[in-house]
Image (tube, rainbow, N blue to C red; front, side, top):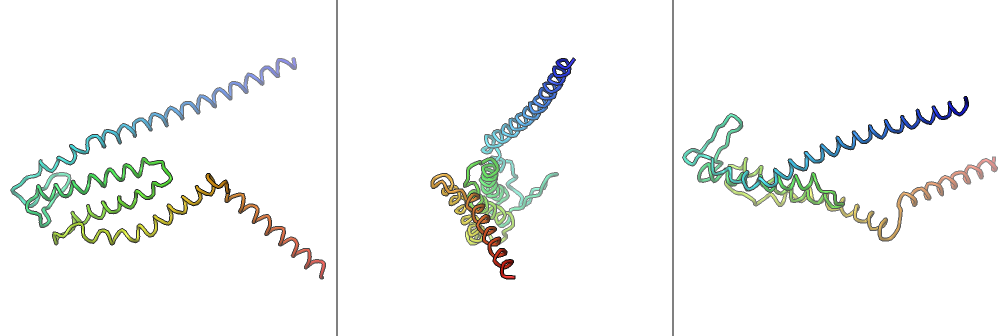
Length: 197
């Protein structure tokens, strides 16, 4: 009777393990399916960027304002609406590609991609909102604060990687050792204080 119970327990445990692995497999398949769909959409979007850029050819030439049910585009001191739309697309396409690159990059330095992304973003928004006709002049000054944050951040990541991978220094272990040293020092001080009383 005892062996039957043990055998039954083993069967139940193996069934539980199988059901857990089946759930894990279903989750992995769902994640894989989402990844494939997302990567396909990104690849199609990148492949169609030349066609997206050519949308400026569909803008009317004889007016200074183009109204559709989705958006309204004005010429903003350009010679005609088609030229304005060409400038908008020449700023939007690199911005879109940089955002895609930032979102899909898995390198340790991917934060640096934010600098040219910000530059293209400033250029795109100044092309849309600028009534003066002066373009691509002051955007570089807007990048300085962004660069002042991102470059040190990326450099710190690089230092940590160099310490860990090249020099074999593990900062977590060092911090743990320092914490242990401080704890022992406090215990010693408390012991001295208690003996003095």
